[in-house]
Image 1 (tube, rainbow, N blue to C red):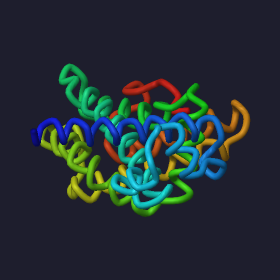
Image 2: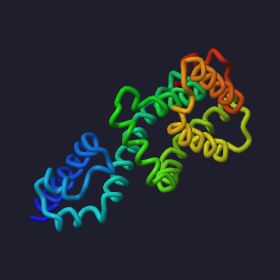
Image 3: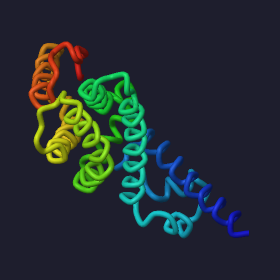
Image 4: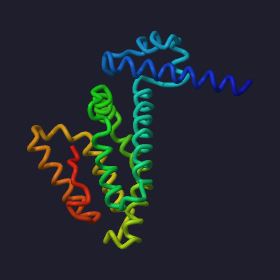
Length: 205
């Protein structure tokens, strides 16, 4: 009996989240009301408030879902042991900066999340991604491929850098500006984690 109740609660939550995704895509975050979400999901206000305290609360939930999705993709790259630690880190940075490319709604939602709950998500990003990035830096150090005396602190700076860059790509307008910014990021990473310009030749954005 308890299992059925849990399944029903999980289903209701999914229905509300699905409605929110759809409505934020159609009307934008600011244009969507709780009435819109409850109508679309076919639930009462009371049911909505059993799962979420506000519209911002459901936005936090969606932000956490996006982060988990990005973490899963990053873990797959980190597991590619045929690549050097440097190349895996380069690929993870590339992935995180381009994961929503071509998905206009997701990019827009990501920007809304960044504006409204930036500090909370930055703290979450550090907690989620730091162990993964630290392990790759430590692997590179142990293999003699990285000359880094403070792996965890270096990994923290890398995570914070990428978290900020995710929302700064649009400031470089035009192909030439984006190419220069990409080359500068590559140079910065090479100076930080080692390797050379042949380790990773793709543009970051």
